[in-house]
Structures are given as structure tokens and as C-alpha cells.
Image (cartoon, rainbow, N blue to C red; front, side, top):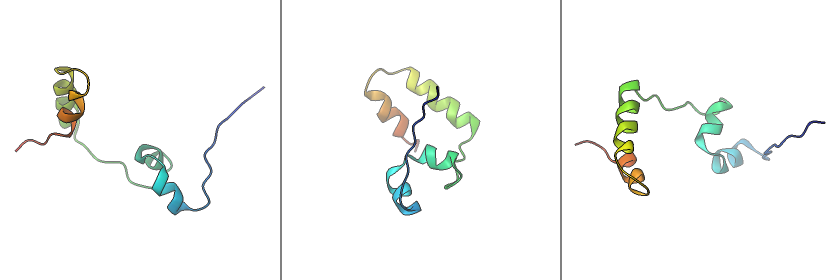
Length: 64
């Protein structure tokens, strides 16, 4: 016995409006963001230094 789950939209515009970007990228609708490996690692290590909701602030912060 198999089970499954699917999200079906009437138009591509509705899908773009409601779906998360990672799912759209997986389906080939939008291009995934190209972030350098070094930047990803730096962000990960900065986030490891803080706890809880402060991680969001560290993740979104830009170096000046």
C-alpha cells in the first residue's frame, strides 16, 4: 500500500505566490540562489555562535 501527498495549483502564478522558493527551484520554475561555498560556511559558523531567535538576525545581517 502506498500513500502520497501533492500540492496542485490552478496556474503557475498561484504556485509562485504560495510555494516556498526551494520547492520552486526543485521543480525548475525559478533558479536557485548561487551562494559561494565560503559564504555559506561563514554564515553557518556565525549562526553556531548564537542561540534561539538571534540566529535569524545573524543570518540576515550583511557585512559592511
